[in-house]
Image 1 (cartoon, rainbow, N blue to C red):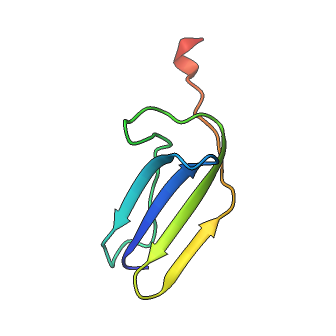
Image 2 (image 1 turned 45 degrees about the horizontal axis):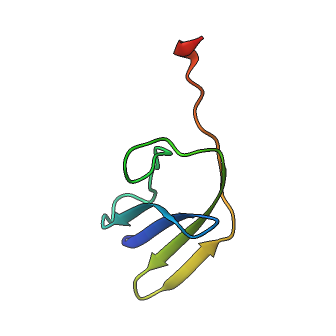
Image 3 (image 1 turned 180 degrees about the vertical axis):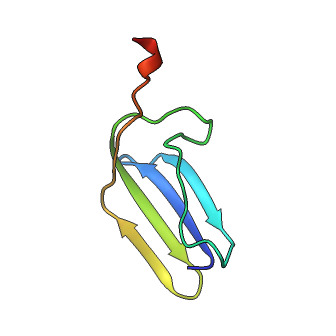
Length: 74
């Protein structure tokens, strides 16, 4: 959609990250797998809430995320 708001929560309801999309030309959002403080998230399950004005909302019941492996530390 041209405009939407995406919120990502932990399973116990803590807000991890929020995005607002206001661009007609872009049809996707990229998430760097970091929280609002720019700290990488842990692997696990997340709830994604997408709200599109004048259309409705969708809640993804689960979302698996894997933290990138830091190969420079080996």
